[in-house]
Each structure stands twice: as C-alpha cells, then as structure tokens.
Image 1 (cartoon, helix red, strand yellow):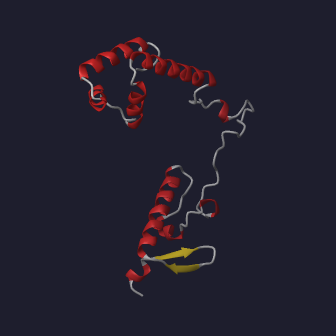
Image 2 (cartoon, helix red, strand yellow; image 1 turned 90 degrees about the horizontal axis):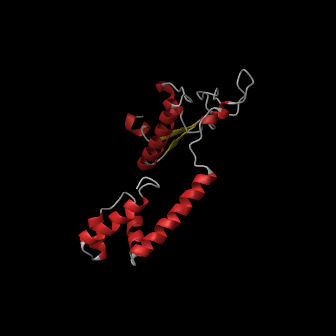
Length: 166
C-alpha cells in the first residue's frame, strides 16, 4: 500500500479498525484534533508522544496520555484554611456595578435625546460599528456638517467625562 493511500485513514481506538475517509473530511478532522491536542498539551493535560499522535481521536478523558492530576479550585488547601477558589480574584462586575452602569447608560441616552433629535439614528450607527467610528463619518451618514455634529458630541462627552472612560 502506498503512502498516499494511508493518508486519508482514521484509526478508531474503540474498535481497533482503520476507516477510509475522503481527503476533505480527513483534513478537517486532523486540523480539529491537532488543535485540541496542542491546546491540551499547552495546559499540561496531554503528554501524548509524537509517535502516538495517530491514536488521538479527541476523546481526551478516555486517553491513556491524559494527565488526570488536574487541580480544582474547590479542593481544600493543605492547611485546611479554605480552598484555592477563596484566593483567586474574581474579575466579574458586582451587581451594584451592573446596576450603576445600566443607570448611567439610561441617563446618557436620555441626555443624548435632549441634545439631538436624531439620537436613535446616532445610537444605531454606533451599534453598527462596535470597533468605533469617527464623528466625521457619523455626520456624513446623518447628512450634517461635520463641525456642528463634532461640537455637539464634544459638549456631550465633556458633560459625562468624569463618570466613566468616555
């Protein structure tokens, strides 16, 4: 059998058989399992040697090369004083911060409606460009003079500059 014929075969560990698959399907499967194996190796959860990569089927929990010595944040510390989870900082916002942000957003939108009657269109344009959009481009989309629109937005930003990162 030539090397080319071996190229599109996948080994099933459970049944111990080789399966012929189309080249495109093999390529897709191989990219997926290679990415998974590399990610697991990077995190120290897989120690599969290169000579055994052909055995990789993506079922890491059942694999003989899977590192089962994972540390859980819920495991008690050796001194019995809590768990690792007690010492890992939580970056999630608190309910108070979420409520404050929601209230600030409502105030910003209300104030923008007071300054500009086309506030809904402006907000829609900003939402369509989450990466950011210049005042010049927004003014162009609204069909206004750039300087007038920029002055209105400067006034708006100056008013709320102290609240958050505007």
